[in-house]
Image 1 (cartoon, rainbow, N blue to C red):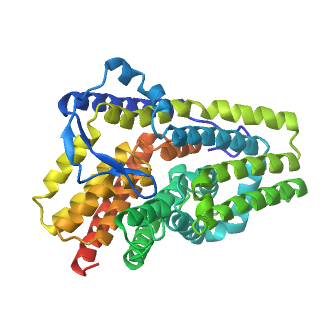
Image 2: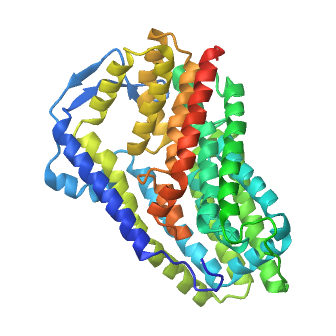
Image 3: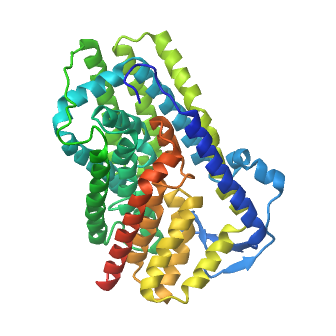
Length: 466
């Protein structure tokens, strides 16, 4: 990412690679519809009116398959399926962020802010890295922020480049950290909160193992990101990244407005952990506040209304190809649901679990959640699907439900920042101008180490009777 005012830029190569990967996954899913028979679990409504699996009703086979034309048009048909409102909200969120961010870049305000940060923190940049990773992990773990941190990703990426690192380091410090915090789930309302409510457990009970997991994962992530940064040409402790900074009163006024308005949005997201009434609207809150911050700050910094409108529109046009990627990724779950193979896969998994010892079973539950997260990125939606199956398994095989919920949270969160079916990851990589292939090559080692660490934490919890 350069430091001039050219605005938002998404690499064509990155876009083509991402489209190719997602299309291959769509094709594989279509092939599976011929190999896996159709089936359905009976479903019922819980006390809150949510649709959950009725374990008493059981599983039964139904006609499977999906017409070729329906599979071919699935990226568009998904807009009319159940849960499409959340998908449409993500797409609008993407366009707002793209437009506002481009206006900030074209106005010069973004680069002015980053130069100021480099001047202020360049000599303590690794301490700043540790603080930023902790901040993003806390946002994910305490209030369930993941998609909501997307507007901050390109800011951190450009800051990372300015501090002598690279773009993937910036994504690691921001989105990867948020995903890790989301999975650690100390008080995540969208995974731990929903899952414990469905399982009949007190909200956020059993916090000590999740807090221990948070600390262990934070240390691993900090070591991983820092180690990569130090290997870069400008990554040594002695690198000179401090430079002169000339103050501009108009830019400073714009920065103050941007910080106050966006800070108010982040504060509202933090308060959502204590105010259930606004919990379902955090993405809308962030989009509106980022839009307001972008408009107010760019106008205040001296950019004319007409030029700001042009920059905003250009940002929307630049980011809009990502809509196709998100629709294609979302169509994979649509194909599985329409062909009735999703419940069949779950049924096979439950039958397989019956033959396992406790240690193997808790890791297998982790694996089930990891697999399902590829098709269903939403943590709360996955909770409604899986917890009614996991809860009876824990009772039958003598597993602690608290431990099963930790396994569920682990399976739900970490892979959000690796699977190409996750909309927030695709948006963030597009904004950061990082190809999916480059991100996968960078992050797979962390995912593997983290898988070993979190599996050990689950086995530890089993051994101490958590």
